[in-house]
Image (cartoon, rainbow, N blue to C red):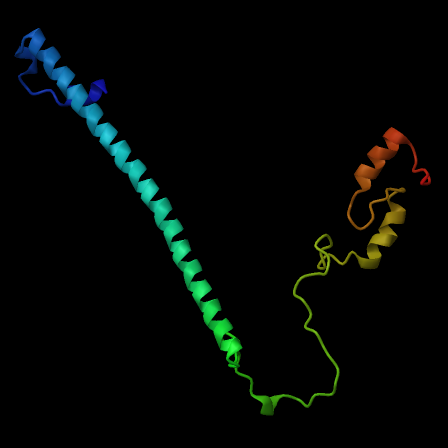
Length: 160
């Protein structure tokens, strides 16, 4: 803050009396602190406005979606088709229906734990025998099983 006050000194500041210099410094300091407080208040108000503008926009979007759902429900009650943005199907190009159902293959593996690109299917069983008895299984808990065995001993049959 002292640098702000010194930058505002006029060229004839050194010629002034001590009381005038002190009065000028004090008023300059108070003015600079007021400017800083106003800037902080403005920034805080801008952040508040941005947050509430976002919440207001979300509320408007939710009202739009609710109104749209209400219109679709009214259309359904009146017997009109209710599919939003239905795909256009050219039925003349489809093969005849033979009764069988073929579901599309999902782009991801069925298990989120196994990476299908590593090919760990039957290879893992062959590698497990070569690892020296580490029971990693499908989920890779081999280290945990080894630690538990070292603490509590080998697994015992259930008693219940």
